[in-house]
Length: 417
Image (cartoon, rainbow, N blue to C red; front, side, top):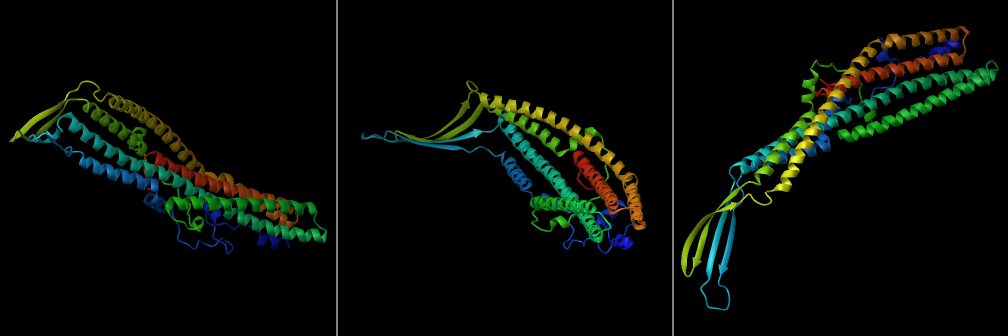
């Protein structure tokens, strides 16, 4: 009887376990494959980059800045002044005046304005890349959280089914008076504990899948069943200094410094001498004549000092922010690469150091139960150790993939090759 029950239960037929113990074929009681098309991490990233409002908002600003840079070389608008004199009750000849004034965009005022517009255009283009990188980070974390919770659900469902069969067996033995009721209550508590853990994991799958749907624009209620555990991507060999400078956030910070410097130069130029040509027509005492002249804005007095001082302070602030971005990038790269290497090494030996001993213990407990020398509680304990080892092994493998992906992002590369 014991062997019949043992053959029908406590085998933990898991699709996830096959990822840890090679060579295991799916059993008839394995969970069915998701009905929807699988959503790989690469596909999720592509959808998020297209859909993410933050990226699209940055793209809209970049497009506007590009158009503004193209228009920065145009001349400022001319002005027209119209006036009439000798108005009133006296019968006097009216004198009319028409003045045209064209500001002259020459010298530093024009060149710095154009340079500032182009630097702002370049900065906004870098901002698009920085926003996309932030979206990639959030999508990777959310996607892998769905995978992690889904793996836990699969493992706990199988463990719960196995415990249910043992509970049924021990309940019959208690009714026959050949097993203590305390063993049954312990098994029922273990079953309840497993069910609660499964429910929590199912809630986590639902929550993370909803978050992933928001990020990718895919409001699919079955999204949690469509994710696929990614393999750890390879890491490229690149120097830390080169990696720092190719990161999107560092490039955006460096572009911000250039944009602030050119803006400060434009503010200084606005405090310099400005010229404007004037010309027009006047009618005085019945005579029509033309006029011409030049207007000079002398660089005395305020000289755009407030705006210039604020712009120079912004240059200092942007330079310090770039320094901070580079320091943070260096720390991010070092810890990410270290985590990827350590976890990749652990993932290669997790089956030997963790899973295989648990399998041996489980087989020994089954053999003892089959021969009548072991009890159900010892079998369930061994089975729980096996479950925990499988969960930990899957977690390490997923952690290794996560660390490799985050290391690639830290190095300024795409999450997946």
